[in-house]
Length: 367
Image (tube, rainbow, N blue to C red; front, top):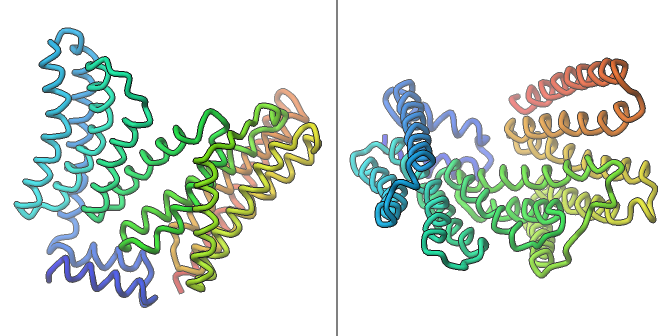
């Protein structure tokens, strides 16, 4: 069976709602090779090999860098990502797509450090934003071309670094959350695997930005939002994502995007207003309510789309928020051993409740 034809067909089944993303992945794993076990072994060995190469190169540079001539340093920096990409292309030509994927992603990972070190060797005054832009221009297209979740996810992480650099010196939580909403909206315009990476990273960015704000108990005065052009573009992009889901009549996507957008606005506005206009206790409650709404919307999205992946993300985010809430309330109100006992008990109970809720939702998803 032709793997490319099968992948295209399965992607169409997902778009038509015939199978879920998880079921599609199981089908591909079953039929992509004659021996699924061997396929997974190739991925594992290739990943471990790539990791060893990365660690070895890093170790070499850390211990011998100053002993190399400038010309040798340039050669090493160019050879690292270059050889990784060449190895990936060679593996693809030899019908070893998984090994080729791992080597190509390794090339994208090595490209960034090479760019920064080459700029340092040249003693140029290139700003970090341009180097991050160049790294993004290498890493993100790599993931798209390979139709890879991991490659695209890594490229989006680099893009996140670029956006935060452009957003200015203010608190990064709002730009990160708005970027996440925009990426979530863009997922529908990409292939299924690349779109999966956009939705996952977008959700992680949005929830991470909101969760960080919940840790500001008593420190809201340190929250500062830089009203830059980048922030305005990100806000417009997030609003466009909400509108896009509305036009497509995607209720689950619309609910998630609208909730995350509203939660970001509420959390940011509350953090800016506290502690002068809004009392600290009220601010803590408001930012937690906003964050909880997004966590619930994430779980609901996973339920409605039949994706246990997003149910798991919601469970992890809920546990992180519980930890933040306990730290802001119980730990502050009590002290010493009593605080630890009470906090630990609450976390255990919350963890059990979340796991039971997760299993209940997943049981309904899998029916």
